[in-house]
Image (tube, rainbow, N blue to C red; front, side, top):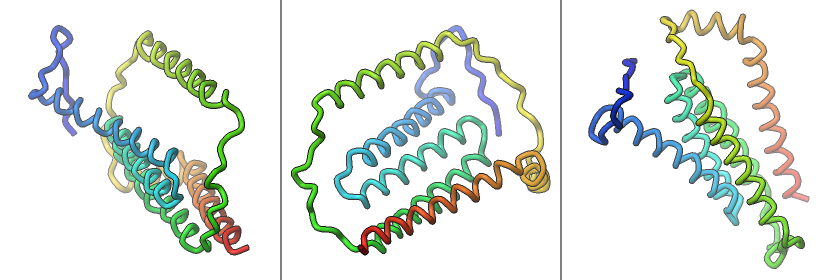
Length: 184
């Protein structure tokens, strides 16, 4: 992969390689936020799972922009390809319930403003931290062929590899719980 170097004196043009890369990155971040908003605000569970899959796909794009294509591929395989599909299967196996929550709302009027203020403070703190931090550029390591990745997965990152199987097991159990709850 070719590295792009941005000049510090002037802002990059939209039609330069740096500008196009920045635009694609912003579109990827917008995909993450759009998927998250769909997942949170959807009235139907199937649409919420679709929004979650869109959010996971955008997150894989962010991982790719962080120069970690292997992590992006694992994000697509594990979370989009396995976890989201297992949740969707759990929803499909469950029988539909009667619409008993049509008129239900949260009883507290402070929940929305309180959540918004906490989210705003967290966003401001993280933005300030991101702006004030002196970021170091680490040299890119050469390599990454299949044999090295396989050896790293089974030696250095063995715990992470096993943790992925636990995440998949929890997704299967969650799908079964959703299916069983809908049948009772």
